[in-house]
Length: 359
Image (cartoon, rainbow, N blue to C red; front, side, top):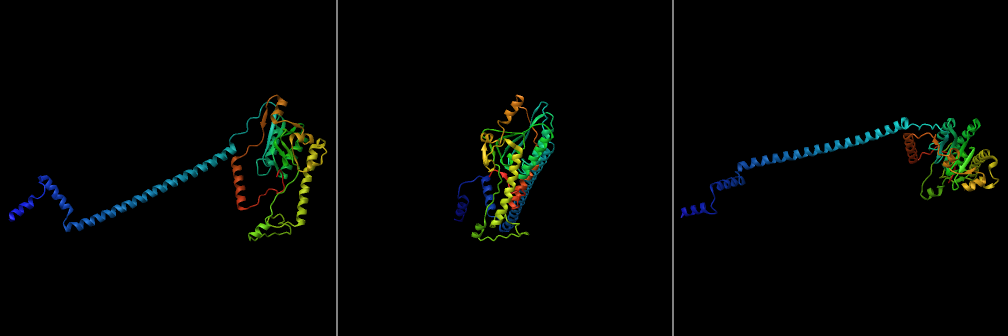
């Protein structure tokens, strides 16, 4: 019976070939290793797992370092591009695009007055006066044309240009003509009044001979918000234009005298420049603004027309040359940045609060 059991044990299950039996024994040995080998294998596997974890960590660190280096290179590249751009703009402002060659034929020497008149704007007295002198000194410029499209601005800048035009008129017989495009008001008209002749389109806005100062009163607002205003001055009236303080009657009266004095200067300059061409109308100097057609009837301008028509009347064709100094892009950008930064920091502008300008 024992032989039968032994035979059953060896013959149970499917019949295997010698090769299949050998593979089955190997698989059984790998699945159930001896206890002495199992502990040693476990330690080896733990060591390999730790090594694999360390390798992964090192790989992650290397990837992060590569990514960090790529971002550093990117930002350095962007910074280099910005620096190169600033250098190119500076180079362009200093040496690039020279003034176009002056025409050899007689022409109109044009000086542009565009935008608000201010010492820090393109329509500054320094820039306009430089252009006027360039056109005046040109032998081929038959006339100097002040091409105006401006609502006005700084009284001082306007007075400087006005005085320069009068000086040039006294030096020679070359005509100086003011041509108004859309707007020639307030300080811009102040300049034009010094010219030999003023021309405007029928729908141009002309005049506004007056002075303006605009501000706000916040004293009640800060009281409601529970804000305490702290201002320290040396001089009894030093802070009388402070918008957070109440304006006393005597301060209002004094400031009105300043406005009236500036207005009187404006009126006297216009009367001197225009002379008997002005109509006898009390509303001329009240700050009203008129169309070009109305301004002609009031004697504020001498004719209806445009820059192109003026050139064709004189030469039969367009002969214009711009003598306005070109703007330095880098300087203009830095000025704009400085002005914006000053506004954000609450630093007051150096511009005069009194303006020859449309509201």
